[in-house]
Length: 455
Image (cartoon, rainbow, N blue to C red; front, side, top):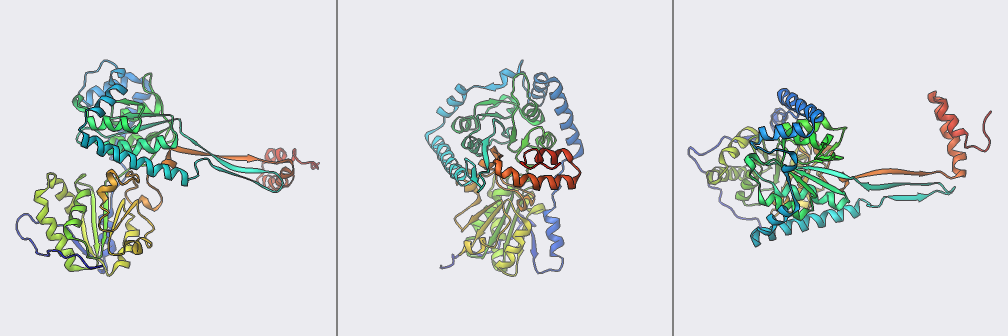
């Protein structure tokens, strides 16, 4: 394939930012990388303790505590928690009032997310499995959906209808009977696109509460808000601290850290594209992480020039600037193989492989939340409408965890149906092991089923 041509002209002047440039060949590169990746997942002790107090209060006082915290933090004046619920009629009205273009985009995104997760359900073996052994013993697994799930959707500074789709649709595909959504509405401002997304995704009930009090209400239940089996969805530090503390009472999806993007590029993509891809995560917040790995020093210089040229045009330029200066890097690697080695160490939330033969390099990747292959696969498409889930492991947890999916809303029960003949063989095995562990009741329980019981 012919390489794309691009302008490598450097820009100078006061607008340039000091994004760090690293050489992966340096002896101390590992130390640089470790410092760059360092993100303390544990919340500040003050935040954790505040969340703990709110959880305990809601557990003890229920609706009264939820109402008190919601009115205080979101500057509302509701007289009861029931007044904080948004009915289906209002959700449908929000959907109906969208412009045809906005509604069409939302519907297309929902359809693609649903189609992907329906395929995922099939591939995961939605009905479980069973098999019969020679002696008639039947073993297997039964897969059943959770009964009720809580979805936390951030509110306040930004609105995330895409998060509604990504959390609610796989739950519905999995067969969850009821979805309870909570979303804070500071000063009573409701985002119509979020409400419309809830209507399209099939959310059953919506409450305008947020923060640790919303997590507590979902985890413990109140007179108005039903207890759920699992809580999913991102939130602020208080939400993360509360989710960590209620795990065990309910399930949770993950404790998400700041957004991340890692781009591996062979130097054949327009540098303006790559610069903007780095911006796409940096604009989330100041702690977001954006890293480029490339073996071509001239190309890295071109991307740096593009960053400085395009940054002043971004509405969130100060957030992007802080993120890139503190958590960004342009890294020169020996070659593409070396880039893949580093990528496996970083285990990024979003990994773009912007190269002429992306699959060749993707085959070398073991750890990534989501992989975007080829120069046209921008991470932004995955955030909104590609289909796969955008709720992804962060902070290197892609080494051992997966994107949110249908499987997160299902549980599995083992099926064990031992035949009489099977009990004769397995009973002796179990009894022998039980005696070895000193558990006589276990052994005798197995031996009672034997035709030739030991004396």
